[in-house]
Image 1 (cartoon, rainbow, N blue to C red):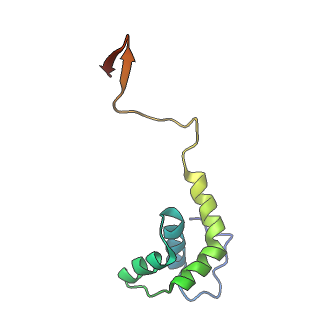
Image 2: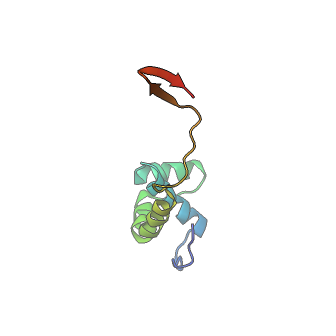
Image 3: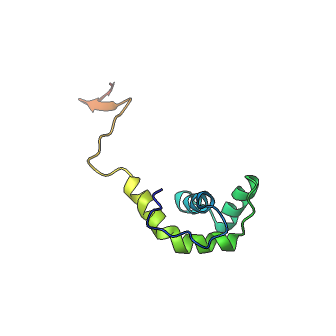
Amino acid sequence: MGSASLSYKGHRYPVEVISHCVWLYFRFPLSFREVEELMLERGIVVSYETVRRWCAKFGQAYAGALRRRQPRPGDKWYLDEVFIKINSEQKYL
């Protein structure tokens, strides 16, 4: 994630921890407490309230970056298997 415009000055945790917590919250359907538990499993003790504050402060930039990465209509799509109906008969391509 590009964090050039975001200021992490004055935060106790490294940029990598903050960005990973915010990314987890916005990328997957997780609650703040679930993000807290995932970080605890990695050996990082952070409260759900801290995750909430990070998401409120840095979330808009991360969410916008995730939205820009999603495929747009008109992008190339490749299909491996196709079933079509010709003269009411199912064909496999």
